[in-house]
Image (cartoon, rainbow over all chains, first blue to last red; front, side, top):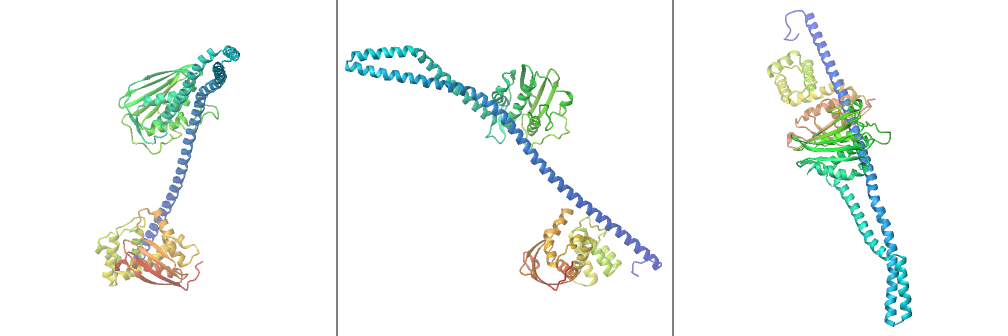
Length: 345
Length: 184
């Protein structure tokens, strides 16, 4: 009997004790359940974190492979652009080598003539003069002289073109710029156009309506990758010779870039999947299906939006909007989830 | 302090001294006493309960804390059998406290404030445990060591050669383990 017992039988006290014991047991079971659930939750969270980390790694690899694909595409275009001038410069140098040979022979004969003149050997002089005249006629020396100037001029132009291509490529890629720079989006578009020109020139006319733009903080190389993607897609969408129109301008506190084509357009069911990773209508092996999703990520990282408007049979317009005052760059530009519909789709 | 300290203290007082003692302890200290292992409570609350119990029983606080530590070990054994199922010696068990048991505790209670143990292993039957805790509860560590000795049916003689209460920056327990039986 304890001091807290109320008057009553010891049977009542026993009942009370048993009731308390039951309550305690119930509490312990509940606490145990809570701990078990906490442990399960912890393990599940751990597993999800591991999966998330591995997904992030995969995503990084995919973005890298898309970049490599763009680089491959670029390299093919650039190789073609450079090959042409290199081809004619090589041929010019070969011809010039032949011309130099002729000049060498002539110079030797002229020197011999001078020596014959000094020694007063008239017969030798007459023979050499005849030989020189024959050589000048046979080789058409006046043509060679004229052509030498032309070939040198042409070769110089060709080498200038190669230098320009390399410079364009450098300003397009902005390899050295890993942080945000103040840049004019119009310059980025011009640089991209130069690089991608080889892909476009036989397929379409390009019309530019570039408005006055303020400088904005951005990753120039990455934005150029987006423009490259949109321009190449536009060119590929046009089965016959068409027109790509590039318009830039300021709309409220944003810069708007519109890239329109007169291609076949995108069907309604494809529109909603356009920015999804791996979505492509190109044949197997020709498109990674990552170009637009990577572009989406880049524009998101800049705090902007990318929208699409398309009519089947008439063409497609992509609109990129970028905030003028820029944004704090996010460390990871996420791929849009597979279920995300495109913003304008 | 984790709720289990309070629920086990409640159990100990009720079993050893009676329900009325626990009840009057709560009345005197002003705590409501509805403790659950899932929650945490202020350290001062545990200290005031032990101080109250010391006043009631006339036993020194440190003795009570040591007895409580021994009792707490038994409660751990009942509540967390998984840590006691492995075939291991008392020494292996003591060495697992910091790297296994406390790691598991943090999974369930990320906010738990746990003591840190470091070890020196000078000989097969010896172990040095360095105890660091802002709570400076070395008598509790002593009680837990006694509980471990009882569980592993061995003797653990210890000497505390450093103590934060004497101005050291940690407490140092030099253990001599002997006569242990396999707990398989």
